[in-house]
Image 1 (cartoon, helix red, strand yellow):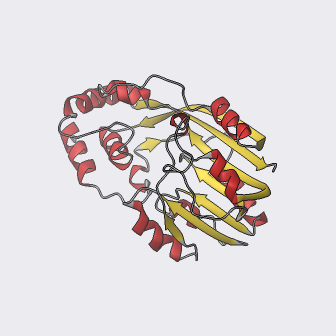
Image 2 (cartoon, one colour; image 1 turned 60 degrees about the vertical axis):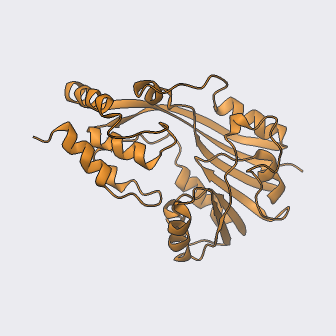
Length: 262
């Protein structure tokens, strides 16, 4: 029987590139949402002549949506992902632009509109903007969209508080990024929201190595996560999995489809 340290060390050594979570297959369970973002994106792309994908990650998800009816451009703000996404997206003819990501949506009040949020494209450039699990500046999305253009986004809410508490990290006070907040931001920026849905579920991890891999792949979820420094907590998670069969964390997600009215 493998020890918790065996599982932890295996996950530390495992490679992670771009936004490919296939290593977690059969080691975790991320429930599907009632909607299917990929299918909705494919439908929207089929109607689009010029589309933008904001913060495309490693490009794997966008590339899987092709072939494309029109032209598609992607941006990415996480430096390690940029060369990975450039290579992956070149295979499907999609250029990538490295650009700093927008501040978290709940932190945008009072920040200058051109601070870490400017999309380097002219006004009315796109008829479709896609965004899956990344921050965005609503006014910038509206600016680069043509009149009647579509913004389709799936977002994760502030569901990481459980992990922060588990690992003894402080939890930020303030407004959560949820469906109501996002709808209000978009409407304030001149969008008409035509679809808005939300879903609460639980992501389950079936071994402690899966938790380690997940936190290494998404380092901003638990700041300064370190498999050695946090090993005592990881051992406790291992004991939970032994007792219950899995370790779970909340997964709140929401979907918005909105159109520009200007």
